[in-house]
Image (cartoon, rainbow, N blue to C red; front, side, top):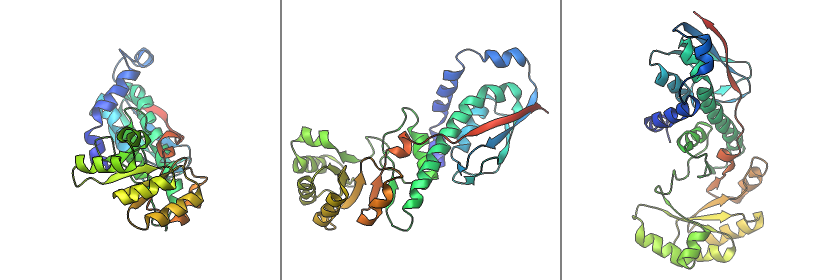
Length: 283
């Protein structure tokens, strides 16, 4: 997920967020600013973190008024500091007021995910293990949240159900077993698709490896069980560790030698990064 892909698909989602916040008019703004007046406001960082979503932030305002101007040089993925002035936004004061909350909601959410992801990615630095996100995203926010993971130094797992084969416990149950599920997926999916399967015990690991799965997910296993699972796989498939992975326990997983560690917490549990628009005044 890169910035071009995100922005190509962003407008309708941003417009829906604006419609959610302005169903007919911005009564507060129209009360105090009934006519056009040019103004400027500062974007201030109120926490240390990693910036993500600055183009989305800008797009909120330009969808309201294409003439809105920005003096913001900080790029996504940059470290930002508490108290830092990131730049200014200049334009119709009514637009600055009406777009403020929606723009900040995107920027704070995305920067929070990038910041949390970065804190975990730093713990894996030098291990060769790739940190992955999941589909545990906010409805209608996936494209923004997965982009933020990349900005924070993580990697994207499949974007959606059309993007790859991942056979989970209920798929295995529906198919009638691990080997049957892998066989059916290989017969159905294009040959360029990798087949990943979720396993919960060592018997499932053996069956998945023998069935020719490309990636074997070790789900909610103990550290010792995962170590034994990797020995069983013995290089026949790539390995992914998953299940309740957090900043507190991920370091202990780094010595296992898995290829990937996935964490739903990157998107579903990251707190926002506090950013604010301050010092609005006419120019």
